[in-house]
Image (cartoon, rainbow, N blue to C red; front, side):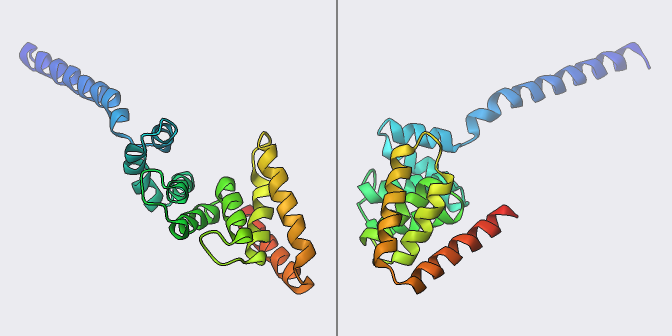
Length: 175
């Protein structure tokens, strides 16, 4: 290899390394994450939160789906719509969000945004109870208290059906 070819090969290698390095530095700027959306939500920038979270929610991210549910439930950055909130909570709950499971269970128990359904309320509150973080004692206590109250007003056949739904869901998620 002559000297000119060696110089060009070295220069091409240097340029390639620079391009890779620049790409690694710039790429995180373009990634949209749930953390960025939840931070915008926490700061009260609901328009920004919605623009970040909605595509992630549409792609099946349970945390983003939960936040979208919260936005509709409380009218934060969108028109308040409890029925739409329940739909987003259900998506998130089905995808494993304990916060959404809790919210959905309470909505079913109280008929907020959807019809009262004690079987569904029992199911989602039970699942939330199993999954809520250890420091979420207030929510866990409220979920257990509400679920236990449901046991006193539900016929045994509904209790059995609700418990079967919980077991089926657990089996599905343990795989």
